[in-house]
Length: 355
Picture 1 (cartoon, rainbow, N blue to C red):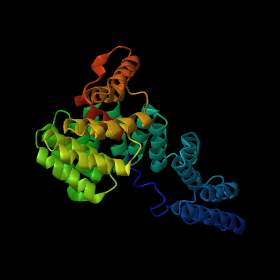
Picture 2 (picture 1 turned 60 degrees about the horizontal axis):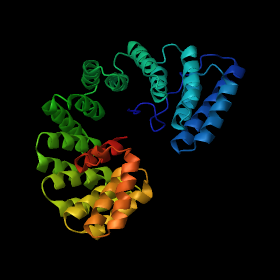
Picture 3 (picture 1 turned 30 degrees about the horizontal axis):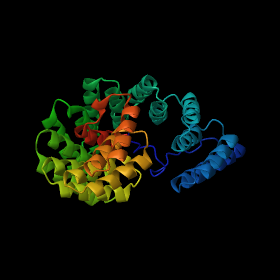
Picture 4 (picture 1 turned 180 degrees about the vertical axis):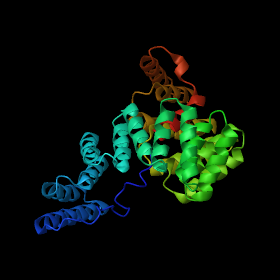
């Protein structure tokens, strides 16, 4: 979900100059504005607690300043306190019912708090106040898609793009909706997102996945490679490129990519497991056992890890420990041996990486 218009990195929107000639009122307002400005600067610097302290001072001096509540709400949101953020955004809206950005940000907080319908209502109100609010359309589209309203999501993404034709996130989001059913349309949207932002890692990754689903494996590898070039610490891209290489019969290449992924994220049991299976297929049974050992150490509750280690141990003549592993696998699976299917394991990696 985009936050392009509400983060501290943008220019603060301060109230219009005070028209009162009362020196006390002018002095109080100027003092509140000074605290507000200090709070925004601290927020930009990542000092969120210091920012809240400044916004508290501004509110104490001028409790009718909606921007003080707005920015304090934003700070709470960035700290993960959705409830406090919603309270402050609501107060900003109470003071200024036409505060479109407060509605949009309250929608973000409600979405984060799993109140999808409340979020849609707030985005809709923001759009009603400001029909050109591209980000509100984009965020509403994201919620609609999560609720299964694909056509509504596409309509909102399209409207965001119409308002702001260089909105890379909206193209990428619309591509996500299209990718299951309109794969060519999805590729076109991801390509446009990349054209706007050549360093858009997620757009490369998602385009690669669609290309792979269409059988364009070399195209998928090229996109994953570009994602890795942009972000060399991207474990997911190494994992998925490994899957494509494996499907092309390049098992050594897959092992190299999985090994790089493990270097980046040494606590991912599933990657050790899949690398172990491939090592076994290549005849490196001792290397396979080492990987299964590592996977079990990280996650001792996955039956497949014991099953495959048991099979390899049995192949090596370590009959007693092999049978012990197979019994453990059967115990964990409650007798359901259908769980031991390697071809599903790549999907497990992908789904976990996407969470």
